Amino acid sequence: MKGTLYLIPTPLANHPLELSHPPHVRKTVHGIMHFAVEKLQQSVQFLKKIDHPEPEFKMGFYPLDKHVTPEQLTDIVHVLQKGHDVGVISEAGCPGIADPGAELVWMCHGRGISVEPLVGPSAITMSVMASGLNGQQFAFNGYLPFDKEKRNSKIGTYEGRSANDNQTQVFIEATFRNSELLKAMMDVLSPDTKLCVCWNMMAEDAWMCSKEVTNWGVVRLPDEFDRKPAMFLFLAPWRQKSGGNEGAPARKSNNRGTKRNRR
Image (cartoon, rainbow, N blue to C red):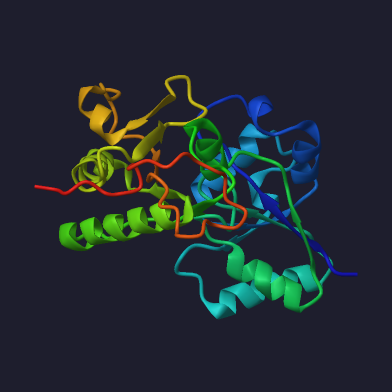
């Protein structure tokens, strides 16, 4: 009998696990002895925090980061085929969503190995919930280009997509570039585009703000804004196509769908 691949969400901040991991999740993790991990030290710390009953030296750990090789993935699959359960632990949040794991999951599906995602925190869904933007249509776009010109061009492209499809656009950035990305969005986006930042979610100092771009200039950011993770979301005023969009909400005719000329 083959084992099961469990996708184990990890905390977004240093909060009590009771806030994010229900008893059945903790019980399931306690029964797993093999883990595919993005970062070994962080994973060991998580297992200690979740009160895993076995010591670290009795467990099996397998690398599952962005540099994982096909051979290393096959090694993990072989563990499952021998009947052992394997838990996937990524850096923060849910494996396979902005973190490694998807390729291993795909391999398991192709080999008839059961895959079970466990309940836990996801910064992406939590930020959409908290934003006040469109939660029925949204897209997670990961990281924007580091190059300023390419990044600004991409922001404009995504804003056009947001306006045409009434779709919230969601991004993440390396913590030390949080301020840089926020400034770029304020410079490029139209004044009436709705912009939201969710920072250090689930921590005691968690901070969230949703305003139209024109009002972001007066916002006071947290003191350590460039040291802790943030999610960036925006929703441009919807451009209704001639004849209307089937299934789209009715709105009064106005000029919000037309982007203002920039200087």
